[in-house]
Length: 66
Image (cartoon, rainbow, N blue to C red; front, side):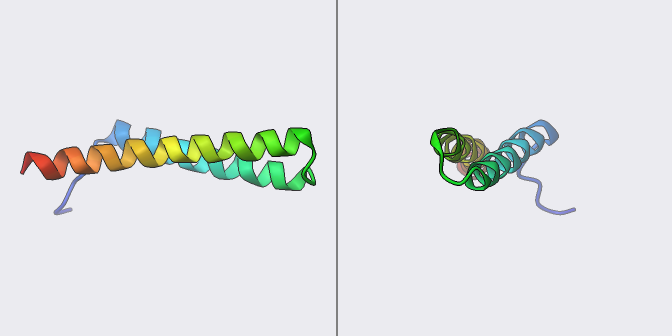
């Protein structure tokens, strides 16, 4: 492949966090907006945001190095 932005570990960590965030949000929605459901939705949003931050930081680090 031509353009390689992520190392394997960065790719795995960011995508595991993104998928984990989606799972937490989905389970929170299934809980019918109870207290536990709202906590899972909020936790899922934070985990997904962390996955995005890790992914974007690696991409911008690579962009600034050029």
